[in-house]
Image (cartoon, rainbow, N blue to C red; front, side, top):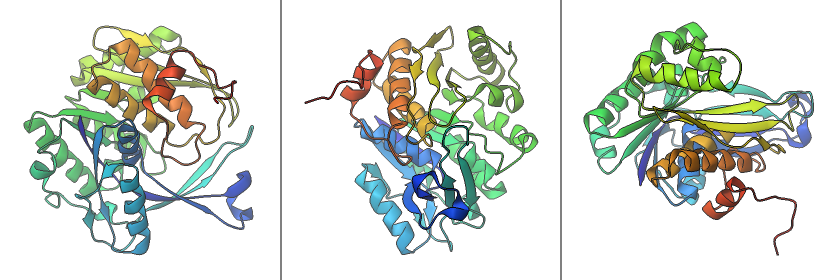
Length: 332
């Protein structure tokens, strides 16, 4: 099971003790990035994951690579160059106060990439899947063209393609995303998106309420963009530390749903990426649609309890939660 994931590796600086940024006396360093998060989750379960990006030659980037490799992700195809690494600042929310992310990634090494910089045929030679997200083309025209180049080579080589729309309004407008992403997602084997992304960016049609609305949106996406399968995370909740989470997988014929999980949130960031990474692993293992969505949703739920973007937890732990295990008993 070989996955190549392409995107920007970021330094994450978060405030301690749920403090606002302007009151924080210090910041906690983690490393992150949606596509790297997917690769880490996939590798946690024993899959062979390779991450492709561009980083500067400095100690911060060196530390990021060391942490990435320590999680079992291959980094040999990451280019070194440019002046800086992208950063995001996280102010964790509490109760009714939502978490806030501030990006500092303009002129980062990854935003300055161009087509032709990566040898995609060699990078993808041993891969079976290629994963990207809508964040990469949001970084600029060069990054969008490089992403399209990678996708085209992967399709030509017969790889399966997965994509997470991952719309970020801080990076581009809905209109800009809608002018770029529909062409890029066409022919995707497994697409991850939210209901609003499906409607506003990819033009999906369907009812706006009820369980059937998610299935109809997914069906519309498969028909409109020649997509085989669609995964969605369905969240509810009024506070930063609670709510529910349910997963859906539309396999081209029907939609299957996980059970509804009650959330206890330590850190929400990166949990959708856990769903994607776990779903890819489940489908590559040959799990049926219901088993796959149960497994992927449980992985996302568990990652809500781990500080930082990157997941931990074994296949056995995730399967136990998927099958109804409780966290209320100490394991001895």
